[in-house]
Length: 238
Image: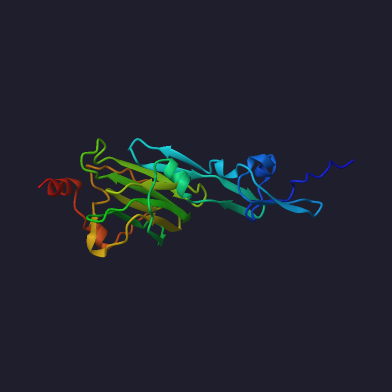
């Protein structure tokens, strides 16, 4: 005989079904969710869902620089995930007020960076929503024990990782896929007359860009002309 059908078979969470969540008892939820029973009934329940960690915050060797892995709920229709939740980010030490969201598109081989704002530094929360990029942060914080050090991470539409970069860091990325769309949140507005930058291939910083053999880089005229890390440090100490 056929196995009995589970009454949780059609669980819907914010319109997105999740087989893993369907196995959770009702008491484990804390937001209004809709259970659509196979018998056709529906009701709203509450429990501990909001307390479930939806993000994995990974500290790096540079204090303040964090890689974030979201929890993805998927089924044969697609997936659902939260990309930002203020309280959970604050609990992880990222208690920031983001004021502007930006998005860019780039083709393979485009390298943007290394950029920063001089008088209006920005914290950034970045991710790739299409394609794949290698994203880099360089510590420019005065007095930092990791001053001049860099950290890089692969961001892609597949791994859905995010990268938190504190203010007073230089930032850049190179596109490794045929095409990429890049999105990020900032804690200050863009000030076009406040741009600063460092050479992407500065030997003292020594970023190990994962550039495949034969891939040609495309840089803007501005990014080709940024000065060295040594010049930046010397000018700052004057």
